[in-house]
Amino acid sequence: MDKFAIVLAGGKGTRLRPLTYIKPKPLIPIAGKPIIDYIIEWLRYNGFKKFIVLAKYLGEQIKDHFININDVSVEILDSKDTADAVRLISDQIKMENFLVSMGDVLCNAQFDTFYEEHSRMGGIATIALKEVDNPLHYGLVFIDSRRRIRLFVEKPLSIEIYALSMAHVRVFGESIYSNYVNTGFYMIRYELLNILQENPALMDWGKHVFPYLLENGYDVYSWIMPHNTYWEDIGRIENYKKATWDVLNGVVKGFKPNGKQIEPGVYVEENTDIRGNIIPPVSMGHDTVIEEGATIGPYVSIGEGVHIGRDARVSYSIVWESTHISGNTDIYDSIIMDHVLIGDNTKIISSIIGSYNNIGSNEVVERKTIFPKIR
Image (tube, rainbow, N blue to C red; front, side):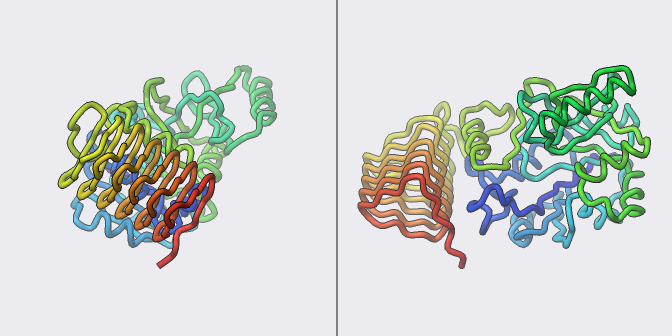
């Protein structure tokens, strides 16, 4: 039977503001390609054949993005949270086992192996885990020697981890301390849909559903990603930049920017006019112009329809679509969103410039966030 995945794409992405004020988080570009495209392309590579994307916030943009993609359907839902979204479309699910994926995580795990392990272990759910150095920012998971999940704690404090570990030793006689975190990928058995229907208060997978299953004696198992698996939760600006640099630099095995690699670390789409200097790694979207004397890189991602003027310098920065950067302008460690006009002889350092803004000539913008102009 064909593998089937649900991709959750309804969140507001508040921690990524101002990037998400006018663009939903799954469509935020990483090296010129939306986050959700990386997810679905990788799942296809792992044998998944059909996808339902569950959207809410700015959902029409996500629907338009997939309008001509045959194996992806988009549902715009008035859901209360992540598990509630799946409950609302449960009548469309026919498979005995299916994957639930967050729509804002960059990951190259072997999901075909994950699927097989879930089927073999026979639990009602299996959660993909990753070992991290500091688990306090994530949902922490405690497992036993059989890889069954014993405790599921959302973003715990250090003292809570210690207390829970000690309590479990006293009750069960074994230590379950771990640095395993919830990665946002779940294999679900069909039976769980009935539990969601019977318990309408179960709204969120991590906060409600998995704790409920454990409290009521259901077998929930873990699948631990190998150490060399790439996993980055695009929850904050620093995570977004890191994921972009990692894709540009070839760190994420199996993932690469759109376009043709014209030299090591330089990806260029069609109709790009490059007359300046390029320092890898760099990606450039189609219909982009780089004028004479301009220097682009290292670590630069440029979207489609961008014009960069003579003697401009752009490094360690992300430029979205349809933006004009005038001559002799310096951009460093910054994010420039769509449809921005930047004048001559201007410096932009460690800043975010929101969509539809005009920055004049001879200006210095340093460590500032300029919000998008809503149209």
